[in-house]
Amino acid sequence: KAGVTQTPRYLIKTRGQQVTLSCSPISGHRSVSWYQQTPGQGLQFLFEYFSETQRNKGNFPGRFSGRQFSNSRSEMNVSTLELGDSALYLCASTEQGLSTDTQYFGPGTRLTVL
Amino acid sequence: AQSVTQLGSHVSVSEGALVLLRCNYSSSVPPYLFWYVQYPNQGLQLLLKYTTGATLVKGINGFEAEFKKSETSFHLTKPSAHMSDAAEYFCAVSASSTGFQKLVFGTGTRLLVSP
Image 1 (cartoon, one colour):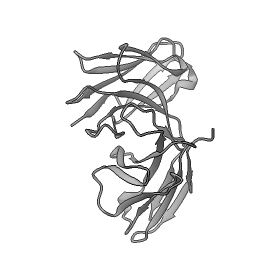
Image 2 (image 1 turned 45 degrees about the vertical axis):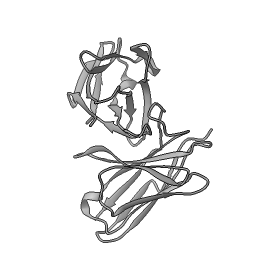
Image 3 (image 1 turned 45 degrees about the horizontal axis):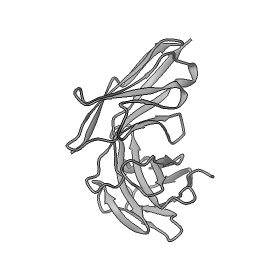
């Protein structure tokens, strides 16, 4: 099976703009989670979607949002970008999203905000 | 709330030496624990996980970890380091009270392997 894919791999934006990142999970996986990775804060959970519904959310401002489509593909959106949003955004998928499941990670999208 | 502490942001070993990466967790419920590895410019790859059952867990690439409830630890070991083991390692606990996936990661340990 193909792994988790994320597009684009690299992105450069300026402050105040908005951005949309895309994630395609492994075929058959219905749960998609998003994480932000920065040198200062490390890996932080953003949100998790299952069957087009957000089931879990981390402690991020409302500028960060996501959605999931019927084919399990997911997008996350960040509006009004700030310099501190520069990070590697990782997407992970599992079959059911249970706590015991193994999460399979994509290569990430590296976002730079200037 | 669940949390993870990884002692040592950097660990240096010689090729062939024992690798020991430390992880301590805090959890109000029985924890599910994971070790992931990240190579440069890549996502995370699961090395091993503990859910229930045997407390000594074997993973890929010769790594293993032992869940010690009394010490709230889940240290990662490998008997003999290889140059290809150089990477960043993350310990994580599954932290959702709903039963659904939400990983809380430690700050990571960068493993350096010298010839």
